[in-house]
Length: 122
Image (cartoon, rainbow, N blue to C red; front, top):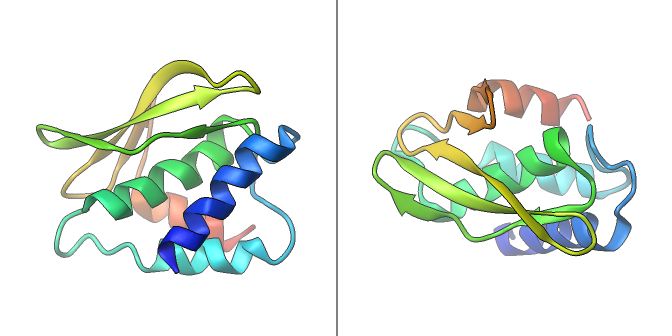
């Protein structure tokens, strides 16, 4: 299920390159919400959960055009590469705290709880 959702997120980012920011439309909303609901901080954030968080944050806060890459472990964070636009231009990565799921990108931070609320409101 999780990999299907990640595939949908990647297709949204690469195929549409439209105004997806703020959330996807259609039946994908429920699948993405379910994937986010499955992210649990009680046991720490694993790579698959970090991938879900980065992908959802990307379409919610960065762009509807592009995608994220597989997060890599780096100390207390997962670091997910970000590829922007049709050409997939690498830009600043998304950092995800391995314990709390908090997201940091450029000069902004967001709690995992806040991202889950935003997804629920899509």
